[in-house]
Image 1 (cartoon, helix red, strand yellow):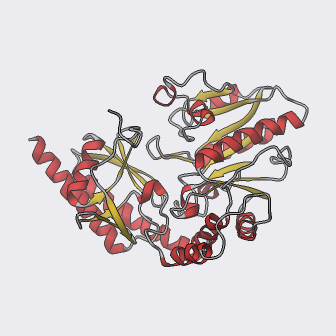
Image 2: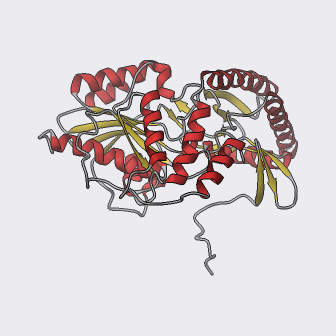
Image 3: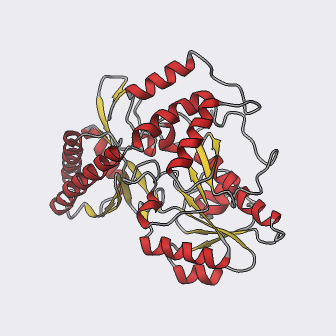
Length: 393
């Protein structure tokens, strides 16, 4: 008999009832140090006072009016994002998946309105993840994502990750855009080098192709810059964001230049809930905190501390861990032991991590994590690795 909740998830046997900062409390009272942050969503941890206040205050005034009317909170958030990024305009969504849908539509509409309707092809990359909508799975293209869901939305070409020669060869008169994550999340915390990002920007400039960055997981201060592409000193034409921007409240957005967004006129896209007063009130509170230079500086300092301790962990457990990769507080431990086994061993020590492809475990703590909590987390991983080896002996 099918469960009342559609069984599409392999859930851990944990039921959390409360969150405090970087900690989650189970129904039975056990405390877990959260190094997954809802898969990079809880950027400011659980029950952050500024977010609680913003949501509570807004909830007592106005929840929803729809985009038939002006929404001051939405305007404020859009203005702040424009002020702090490459973008000239913003459309608000409820998720990264919805942001992907609009990014694809925007790129294709751009060329249609430029009188080149055959420029519909979007180049994407092996190992990518762009959500689970029809466009998202077609963009990723992997059998895991697409099997059984055909016919797939056409117009996507998947290339090998970081193969610039292949990208140059693939761009032709039918190419509308290149869509890429500056750091792959689900794909195993695989960063694209600054040189590759610059190369993509140069190629797009030379061919007129639009460059779309998916910063749903790596954006909103996660890497120590407000957005990950800033490290390379380049900017996209269109960018998808979500996760951290709402700090736990469902919120996403598509940011774009005036030129890239030129085809999106009244009636070409919409959202019932996107950018509603509740979501944008929280988004404004998040952005006010994470955009501060001092906050970003602390993310970088803590990232250095965590990486240093993880290097020691790898040296101490060379039979369990292989290497570390990623940027800021978006780190991946490449494992020699099975990553799922390590994640589960962490549960027994009171630590929550997230598995990814390429036998990696993701470490995505709240950006407000403390030095002491970083030390505790690495200590828990140390014990988990020790017990894993003993159990296997």
